[in-house]
Image (cartoon, rainbow, N blue to C red; front, side, top):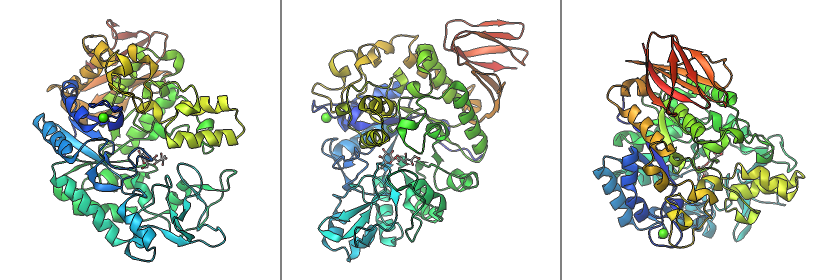
Length: 557
Ligand code: ISL
Ligand code: CA
């Protein structure tokens, strides 16, 4: 594999609205982020991905963009953004913005012009179809519920397509003018000194045309978009063109949000000269999700399920490219609340999970608050929920016959709001996130779980993340941690996640993902422990004794 500048980096996702509020309006902002750059530098972060901060009505919290060339005043100004880019550069860090181009906001000028004149130039920027007798061109279900077709405002005889919220009309990528507008915008931002982009929901840009129905998969008579996506051919032509016109000439770093990729497509996506630098592994993210909805999905993964997901993803990717690894993001529950069974949740198991995913081959992304072990929050009632997706899943659960209480309980564990509660900086009111009233209620556990409480504690989750990052960056082990081949070890052993990383050196990663201690015979003459989530470890005659939730990385010879 050809080495790239970003391979040995550590990335961090900021959800700006919930990171740090500098002016007391309850909404996190760019000056707030700037004031925390030293914290991120000290943690060891190199690449920062910002969820959208563009001008937006925030119907989907910024993933509905009304102007790709301006910053929403709630987040700050263009000067703030330029300052953020400069300040990160000064510290040797890079900024990624979110590229949301499957759709824009219905408040974007293009859509407003399309409403004025659906048959004119901007009508063709979207998918607008005639509407007679309330018939829709296809029966796809939008990701946030209900049909993907919505009457075009002011034109009862017309309708437009939105695979997400109705305030997110899909852009018509078949129209070369749309693609040129998108490329122009990307280049404009890259010229400003951006490191690159995280690329949102990108698989959706290619529709299977002409529109057609698929077999209904729920009582609503609609069909999941997955069926259409499985048949849509040719997304690569768009992506290749975009890369050639924008990312490649700028040598930009890009990470794609790609679901449902087929093995034979991986090389095109992230192989040498691929559309993107890297893409996320979502094998474990999608595991256990039911076609019926969240209410029917698996709330937790067992250690065995988690292990099989990560190993199969590693095997699938092999040496084709460098994948990006996560345990959570702004769309998912907190990783420690999803990949650790509730009865196993403690600081040791949080560090274990961190250690396992960090030591996989790939670029590690940390989501804000993950580094202090932030957990899912509690919702006392559906009124506590902000997220459009959770509200939809709640309706789906009720429609399936669940009681209000049961429906809330089932969707709570998946709610995107779990990840969106304010960052917990300290134990003072509102977790030190704001002097005002936070836009979303903080997790009540902030007095216990916060940055300040962990910063000077060597045994904290935060300190363990720092140790993981330091190992990944150490001169001695860097090459192996980044490029070493992953070879599973004792894969059949229940609740044990073990693997070697084999490169210049040979590292052994062992995670005893259970309460019961166990002993492991190590196939090596000697082992030097480099990382340990507990303050002790037993090694005798080639046998390592692992305590409850113990995680170690050792160099073996
Ligand atoms: O396809 C999915 C899972 O198989 C969906 O989860 C979908 O691809 C995903 O939700 C896309 O998410 C991104 O785009 C959305 C936005 O709401 C999310 O926050 C963003 O991460 C629309 O822009
Ligand atoms: Ca603010």
